[in-house]
Structures are given as C-alpha cells and as structure tokens.
Length: 165
Image (cartoon, rainbow, N blue to C red; front, side, top):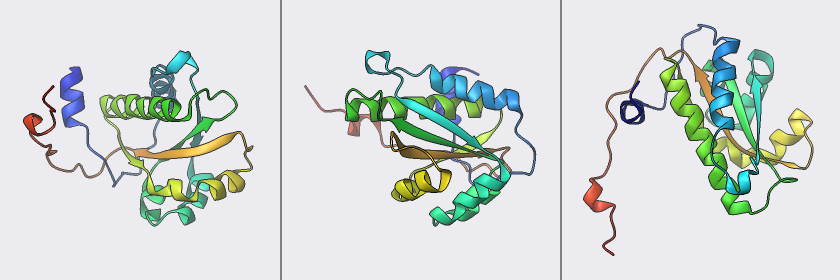
C-alpha cells in the first residue's frame, strides 16, 4: 500500500468481526510501534496486549465498553517514567508509536480505534493490572477485523491550516 493511500484511507474502526487476529499480525504491529522516533532514542513506551478475559475486564473503565468488548485484542500503551527524559517530548513520541501501529494495522487489512477517554481512569487501570508506579497509562488501541468501515474522512482545507510566515 502506498504510504499516502494508507494515511488517507485509514479510519477509526468501532465494529469488529469475531475473526482472530494472529500472533504474527500482533508482532508486526508492535514492531511498527517500536520503530517510532523518540527524543534521544529513549523509546519511552511499553506495550501490553490483552485478549478476551483481561481485555473485557477493562471495559468497566470506559463509557465505550462496547468497543473494548467488541475488539479481538486491546493494545495498551504506557509511558515508562523510569526512562523518560522530557515528559512532553516523550508523549509526542508515544503518539508517533501509536500512529505507526495504526498505519500498520490498516495495512494488514485490520482495523483499530485509538481510545483516549479510557486514559481518564489510568491510575485505576494500572492498579487493576497490578503494574508498577513507573508506568503511566496513555492510550488503548481496540483492534480486530473490521465488520463495518466508516465512509470517507474529512479534513479542513490545507490553506486553513497554514500560518503565513
């Protein structure tokens, strides 16, 4: 898939089929995230992949529980505070890792939704999963084989996004 085609055709998917996402696909998705740029190459992210039981248990932490329960897998993304050197830059790097994973997911014929609202319950999620205080929950990717793909994306005109310099 051409990179611009992938960027322009990727959509947030919120309805998934029951088809299993392979271990190979998950490995490729995580590898894509791993290769994102980060300041000083500190790679401040940690990933956790959850399947059925653990994934469904996290549904209570979001008003979008249907999305968590309907996904085949849930990838959680954390900031590792022990290796963070600049909080804001590290969050930007994590955003780059997430975008890499979303584009990889799309290129594999899968779909995902970047869940942000669930972040509001980050400290409770850390406790529920029994994780250390060095981790800060940043986002979740609900993913699977799409059963419904939304229509064309809309964007503002480029001229409306450029500041004259």
